Image (tube, rainbow, N blue to C red; front, side, top):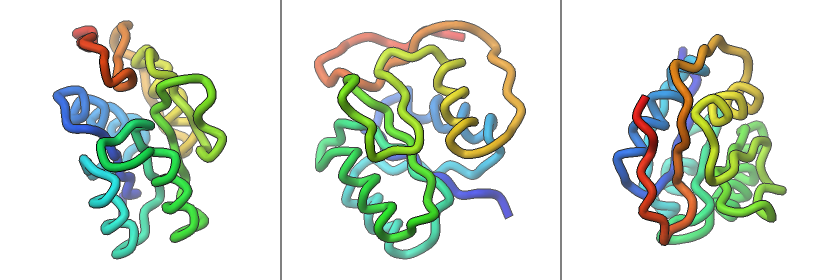
Length: 139
């Protein structure tokens, strides 16, 4: 059975790209959820090997969600898509708001286990600053 990892991000076209990259890199099924409330519902109904959360969700903070995930299942690995340097002390892995695709994959691999991943291009992705209009680079 493939590992199940939940990606909790505000809905955007970057969300499906990030889910695809992480799923391919670590060999897991990635379920995308767009709110902390829906994520908590899923966390209460089944076990998850990992939870990746955006720091700023519309209905709550990603760090709070990761703490709740850990309290429900202490073995769950967590990764935070941080928006500033002060965040992330509750997560197993932290990716800064302006990370390259390769940096995102490196943190995912370190957080969730060994896998093979070869970056297919460089560029910057952004999920952070809610006021940012930056678009991801095209690979």
